[in-house]
Image (cartoon, rainbow, N blue to C red):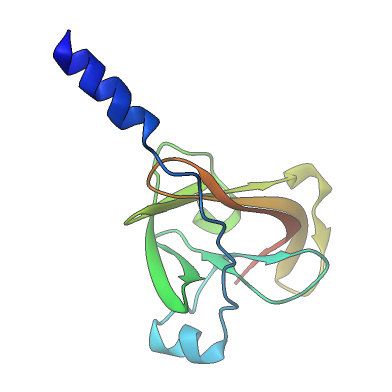
Length: 138
């Protein structure tokens, strides 16, 4: 009984989530971390500033001004060009949900999709959630 009480108290002590504002992934980041290749990127709102980059082997976000490398969740849904719907990295995980039936050609090798990005902390709390555009291409 005591162990159950302690567990209940510890569970109740999870702090409320601290919102996160992901940074823009720029060309210096892309070059430094060799982010070149096929996959999808996510830009919030109607902007073009990428805050998440998803590839078949890894994903990236800039959190607290540092690039965080994520691993794809093999059991999550498939996105275009080998990207996955969910990635985890250290204390973080994110899901990119895109409307695949609403994709529109945006370039010779790119398609834009309405999308939503959700970032969670290590307590599985949502710390960032935004609608925007996923651009997938090579």
